[in-house]
Image (cartoon, rainbow, N blue to C red):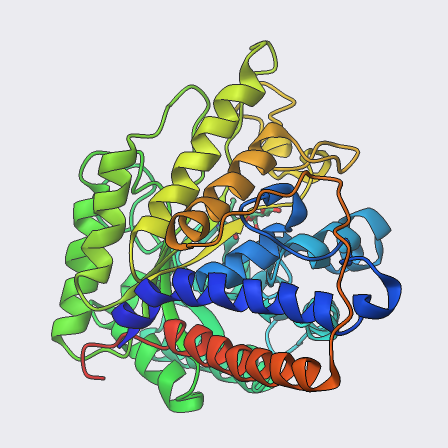
Length: 422
Ligand code: 9MR
């Protein structure tokens, strides 16, 4: 079902878009005499936001937010205009929500979630358990009794999911269980719980909110030979054991000067959808050299190729960018790459970069290819609208209404879990 709906999504999206434009033209501008400037015509990508195009493709496009960024007019404005999903960059992490045992702090995460709800955005819950010791609170790392540690994990998952029940429908249950630059396990304290701790975490999360999508999130599988295979093996084992996993998030933090092998990346995405799961690009950023005069052009190619790769794989449900503007990227504070790393879609003044245009063009491409509609209007023209009858208005409104409903249904089912058991 999901494969069919995803395949149809661009076609339906295009029809929906055409009907919406037509309806907008027929109903309200009939009075004003011009099509509103907000009409998205994929054949003319500059008329569309990323958010509009992603919706028409049946995927989500996301970015991060900290609580403080929801009151920053530039960040918040760009976020809600261009993206329909938000990942709280840090506010839901264990060290942020329960830095000390039994002391819970959800204020910042609540702020991000409320901002998303106010702007009809989805939230990617990130993350319930992060299997890297450096991001695990000291009091958790200090627990030596496995029974006590297991109880602490259960409390963290249960309390966090219950707190956000109804407003967060998608969780990175486990983040980064594999070794940073290798193919084995991470050195996390959580592996001391035994081989089953990931399966147990997913089973618990499913029991708390059976309607939530449950994801495993990992990084570096696009960098390190063998890490992708190790991730596939881990996921396959979870599936074979009936673990309720819905998707695999590939963080896709790209490295400067490491051009994407698009065919290999696409095959990697497909490896997970072939297992019956969804896949998503969950933390995309593409740092560039501060001294490369062609940096932004190269970066645009990378962003375009990654976007196209996701769109080419049925079951690739989301592309989330790890930040909005180059002014607030985590990479500049990392101390690893020469700064400024400028890895995002908007510059420090929140102006769209060539990478933004590349993502927009890549999102528009399948819609245009799927559409029999050819838009020939010049970019700035305001076509005259002929007077229409009341019956025509009603008919157009009815058809548009039905298609909107159909489009929403398709989008919902395209985002539906792909558990093998379903
Ligand atoms: O971008 C995040 C940065 O602000 C934090 O300091 C850091 C530690 O919490 O985490 C960064 O986000 C990470 C994400 O949660 C998991 N994948 C790797 C990301 C970059 O480290």
